[in-house]
Image (tube, rainbow, N blue to C red; front, top):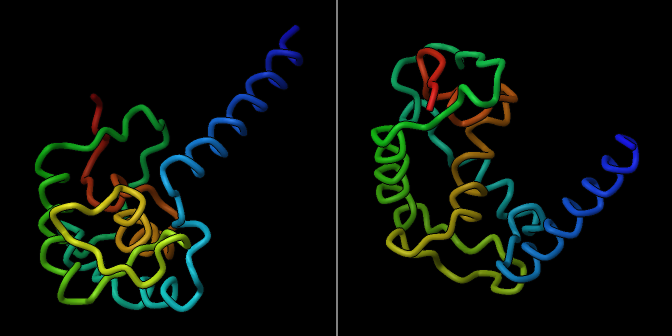
Amino acid sequence: SSEARGVVLFGTLAWLRRTLDRSMGCGASRAPRDIAKSADELVKIDELRPTSKLPFAIQATEDRAITIPQLAALLAYVERHCEAQRWTSSDPRTPGRRLDPKAISLYDVMFWVVKPATKADSCSYVELVAAAEQVP
């Protein structure tokens, strides 16, 4: 039945999340509060947005493809701010470990840039930087 498939799918997704958290050190959601507050205060949203406009709402998730130039801009942001702002690991297993912009994990990019930048508007990163729907 569809209800049984939903239960199995939910259980599988929960297992996958736990497994990834353990194996890949996903600490962004469990980072100490003091560095979480720091990330919120340090993000420079104006440097991420191509214009000073509000985020562009994209209803369909599948229309939120990120472009190579948008990824390059995100990388450039990380390279400009990671060392200058003394970003540290969001993984609770390695608290205080300084991050290297050339070897930063996606978890730490999410923690230091994406989540703080999109928090106020409750939007996706692509909605923050896009001017229109971006179909893959």
